[in-house]
Amino acid sequence: MTDRPLSSREPRPALPELPYDAWSDTLDTLHLFAQIVGKVKLAATHPQNHWWNVTLSVDPRGLTTRRLYANGIFFDIAFDFIDHRLVVRTDRGETRTFALDGGVSVAAFDRSLHETLAGLGVDVPLLEHPFGIPHLDTPFPEDTEHAAYQREYVERYWRALGWSADVFQEFMGWFTGKASPVHVFWHSFDLATTRFSGKRAAPRADADPVTAEAYTHEVVSFGWWPGDPEVRRPAYYSYTAPQPEGLAEQPLSPPQATWVNDGGMAVLPYEAVRTDEDPRTTLLAFLQTAFEAGSRAAHWPAEELTSNWCPTSDQLRALARAGLHVR
Image 1 (cartoon, rainbow, N blue to C red):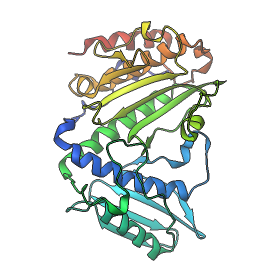
Image 2 (image 1 turned 180 degrees about the vertical axis):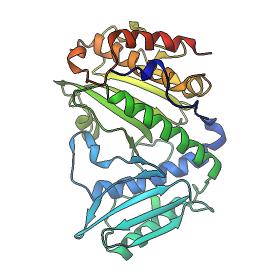
Image 3 (image 1 turned 90 degrees about the vertical axis):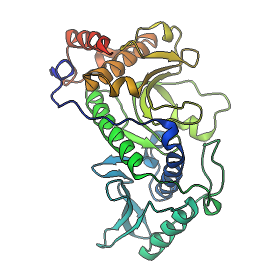
């Protein structure tokens, strides 16, 4: 067993401020860039359950597709948020890059990526339109409006994303049931990970194919998103699907965590974590209490799904109490 949740082993991280309104134009541009790369991954990977084949992964310099395949060639695509370039590599030893900043519009990014892929022999056809972003609906080749790219805020986003992914990775190690990777869905541009009870869920009435595949089984999901026009601040979240009765009556830690959307989602502002004296413990407390809320309300055999790395019951109770120190 580990005592890490009760005694952080890392120096207090310098988590950056990330006010949505200060960089929303850059965020929209970056989101659209990620959708284009994500659609390449959709076209160049084998399908996997719950759409896990389409997601992006956090790496030491940004985001990566990991391995893709087209025309007999393995390749990958990475966003390098240190040098602010897009990088494409193949198994033939070739590497091509182009800049992300300097006024690159979505249309220019789309064109440059296809030209780069074609030059390497791995281009694939795409549905050249944003998916599921109500306020962004211009086809990629026509979008010359979105070209904002503030290096400072992209780097802030990346630091917050990378740190959050590491905490999520620790938390997911406490679970021995079926679980997703810690990954980024380019649909809503959120960092996410999911635990499964192992039971099938009733089919959702009139669900679209994406939703139907995502929710074939009972889940408790967790994530972090940088904000959008509806939720204009970065925040951590958790939800249980199907939503069980009494979910919103379950306690959460720390006190800044609340139930929203008629009790269907637990939310903790990123700012509450960023400014805390022990951000890791505070975030772990939120993730654990949100899981306990969902698994308890949905009657999961939670104790049967704990791994050898999961803290003891006493440690978990102490973890929940530790989340109460948030300023």
